[in-house]
Image (cartoon, rainbow, N blue to C red; front, top):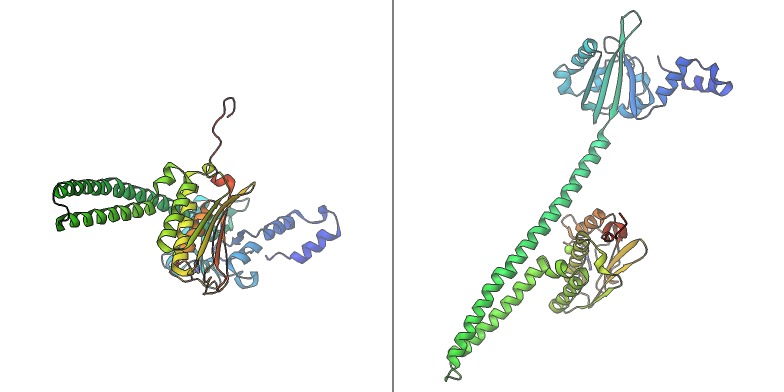
Length: 376
Ligand SMILES: Nc1ncnc2c1ncn2[C@@H]1O[C@H](COP(=O)(O)OP(=O)(O)O)[C@@H](O)[C@H]1O
Ligand SMILES: [Mg+2]
């Protein structure tokens, strides 16, 4: 029952369509289908025909599989529970059975299959066998899983951002106010002490305490702002990047330049957040790995894309681009860019600095134009 492809081609090639019998044309069509395994089983479940899709999906050549029982496509667990026979019994009783489950290829590997078995009868009602159509759903499953994982990543990232915003507010408002109150209390104490008693040790101690509290408030503000800079929500991306650069320069003694050649107010909040986090991580890497004396942050835009660049003049990538398994910083940047439909490029060579360039499509990160009257 194997269809002779070459013979059919010869016939198709030599004359007009009517020369090819209808039955052969159907077989040609079925054999040409690559995405579905389409084949016949005899009434006892032995493979009776085979098509190109079946060869591709299951890995058997027609000559190896025709005549063998179709239970070879099932897993040992399914065979133990008599599933193949059960499916034929249901198809016989109801005309058709559908199933999704694991099937086994010739090489023993498994794939997730979508299967339909239909009983085929002749005109007098005698069972001729079964038509079996199988589709390999593995790729689809993998895509669905990837989609799910990426949706999950987006949700986790925004939950994390929200949590950081909350902690930053509490640190700033609650703890910050308590420290300010403490400072005022000490200032009052200082006034009392200084009345008539110029240089007492207690007075010197209160001054010291004031200084400590100022430093603590400074640290607290910095920690809160790094968690979620309030200017990102209140003023937008550019002031937040300026603050980040100032803070970085102050803490690590690296000259930090910021060039913003784009109206930062056009960006959506998630886009501003993503760009801020990318630059923040890039600067963390400069502090950690670069030993640079200068770093430049550039934000520019063309007609259809926005480009964010962070480049330093430090040691460059000593690893030759090799990825460490526990390095999540660059991975996180790529993921953020990917979520916005963009991508990240890295150029670096040993001793030649490190440059991260992030390209983002403008239409994915730009807030919509406000509605104008008369337009939708
Ligand atoms: N500015 C930089 N200068 C030199 N090397 C860098 C710089 N940024 C990143 N790298 C290199 O890239 C690697 C991966 O960075 P990242 O994914 O952030 O992981 P981590 O910082 O945890 O090592 C770093 O370990 C480092 O070798
Ligand atoms: Mg890092």
